[in-house]
Amino acid sequence: MTMASNRAETDDKAGSPLTVVLPARNEARSLDSLLPRVKAALPGARVVVVDDASEDDTAAVCARHGVEVVSHSHRMGNGAAIKTGARMVTSDMVAFMDADGQHDPLAVVELVAELETGCDMVVGARRFSSQASVGRGLANAMYCRLASYMTGCAIPDLTSGLRVARTDRFREFLYLLPNGFSYPTTITMAFFRSGYAVRYVPVTVAKRQGKSHIQLWRDGMRFLMIIFKIGTLYSPLKLFLPVSGAFFLAGIGLYLHNYLASQRFTNMSALLLSVSVLIFLIGLVSEQITALMFKDSEKG
Image (cartoon, rainbow, N blue to C red; front, side, top):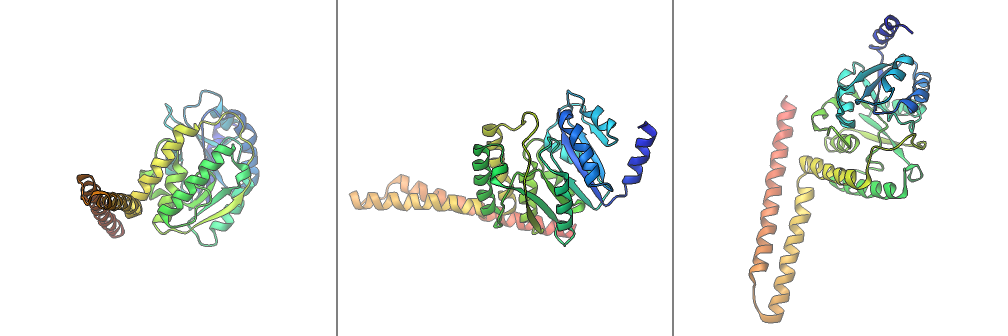
């Protein structure tokens, strides 16, 4: 296929209702088999691969299969690739898939159909058996429980990279997305806390081709920090109130112990109770700031 025909195909699909974005780094092998399946399952969709400074033939494979490819000049991270792809979207709907061959393109068809029923984002929820390992599955389950508490909504799969969303809704949160891992965590919690309709569709994913770029302990701590960051951004008291309560109970418990033992009120008890009050007040002020932020956002 010539460069001119590639340009014509890109122009024709620029007005399609769906754009499929695949962030990729050193995924030439999996893309060689995945891209034909994507084009067959979604014949009217625009397909954009964001090459995050791959050291293999990722860009050449994309060109051979006649799909758009945007290459970063240096490695920027999975989240940065997602943001690059999202900024290129001209369609009303955008789908995100991993480029490692785990996701079935036919699942995107199901997610799109669900999105068209009237929600803002549909996520492919992996079954426990589809997790890369037992450790990853247990960690993801823990993150889901914590994120569900922070948002007040049930989240069966927090880190799934397979999702379809309304483009305008998704772009509202680009400034929040980290350049590295994990954009799914951030965008999921942001949608829930903003009151947008999110649905989950159970999916089965295949075994990953090649080596995963995620390191369990290092990226696990990053996921945890993202949950706390987004949670405190949208609902600070969900975090500050339990911490304040823990210090308060510790202070009361220490006071009762010392009072029963020697009828004394110690400095440590006073410190714990004071800290609990300060943490609660910080959370309360943060909650008010969040309310003002949303008020200004609605005016804009």
